[in-house]
Length: 164
Image (tube, rainbow, N blue to C red; front, side):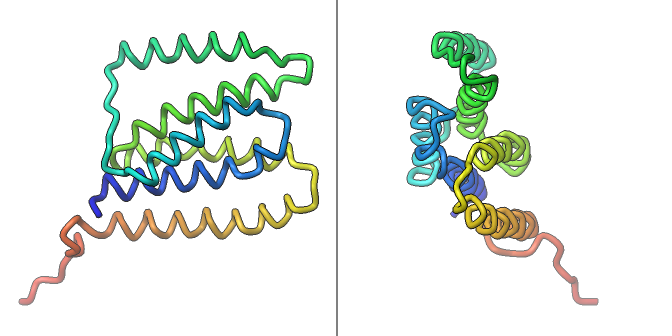
């Protein structure tokens, strides 16, 4: 697996894990978490497919996202719903742009915020189990990213000891 596919698959797995409680909560409407879930599934199942958008296309997508969030409304249930909608759509776009370690690390704060919204809006006791397993998932991801940074595509370590 190439490093691009590795980072795209890791981003998809983290996003899908972060979205796990959202179908059971009513803080974010289904179309928004479904879009983010579809992007995560595409990254997991087809990590070699890459979407490279021009800056003008990203700006156009941003305008469409803002219009969709405003049209969905939801202010009557508090500020978390429109902010969650906005965050999910922006995260879906950010994660779809992951191509290397740097872009993966830039996408991590958005994925982490999706996880925080999913965790903090949960009121069931199973949220504790989700939190405990999430600690392991985030730790494992950090270790995988660190180990991937030490290796190159052909499997040779970056820093090799040269015989004297």
